[in-house]
Image (cartoon, rainbow, N blue to C red):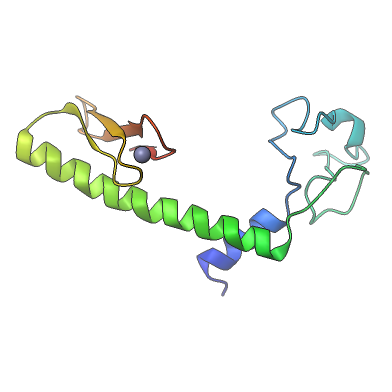
Length: 136
Ligand SMILES: [Zn+2]
């Protein structure tokens, strides 16, 4: 079985670097998805996703193995930092009893604002300066 990191790398390298999700009308390069998709089958298939070699997009560009690896490492690092931050916030809540507040973000040193659901005690947080954040 492939490791989580290998799966991440597969995912990243199989997706055009301009792809931003088909809920958008155009990709980051300004190409209209409806102009390049293959409509011979449903669900439609897109040249932005490598595993289906269909349709045509002249600007489709896939990350190199090195780029995909680098991104996978960044995503993993962010996930690890987030797990760490969840623990820190919960400890802080236990210690202070504050259900809403902020701590110093372990990812960037910025302000990590959190709040607690009244109903179930779930904690959500977002950092004001980096991508750190989660919803429980
Ligand atoms: Zn941060």
